[in-house]
Amino acid sequence: LSLQAAGSPLAATGGEVSNLSAPLSVKPADGTSKLLSVKSQVEPGDTLATEAGTYARVKFIDGGEVVLRPGTQMKVDSYTYDAAKPKEDNQLISLLKGGMRFLTGALAHRSKDKVSYVTPTATIGIRGTEGGIQLGDDNSLNVDVGSGTVVVTNKGGELEVGVGQFACVKGGDPPPTLIVNGKKVDVPQNIGGGIGKDHGS
Image 1: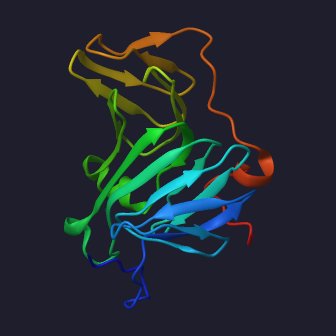
Image 2: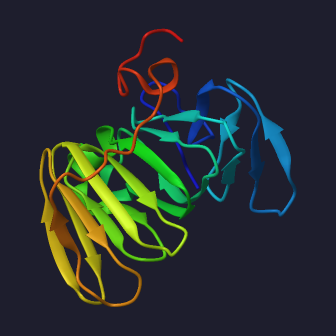
Image 3: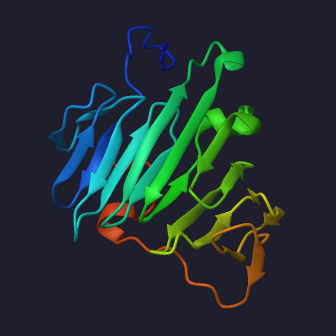
């Protein structure tokens, strides 16, 4: 994969850990396992796992970010971003367990159809946004949107979810539905506050 940030033709990573409250482990594509720290690199093929009580924030080279909640497993299935080559844009992230908040970066703003978040229950397509995804123990899925719009799709149908709205998808094939008084996927201010903004941390 060629992962290049503008002005950094030798960049070879998808992103890095920018904030971390406790141990964060990673299993790269080669199947090994190790612990990450702040400034550790995150590569395509990596599966990240947070322990109980661990929040972790990852910033990608296009400016997109994710904040993982405790007990979460997330895989960076693919990630390709080169400011000079928009046709090669690609970001696919799988939420395997737990929950996270996400903020899309330059890649999604110019190539909205090239960004997806996949769960065992449904796929979330991005329209340039900030939101949250939470999987239940029964693989039920809750989605909230802080800005922009997402499209939640499964075998049962498709649902557009806008700012301030909440959606739920049950396991199996029932279509996604909007719900009232849904719960936002929360993250602590010291890890996820001002997500998407560079405060030099």
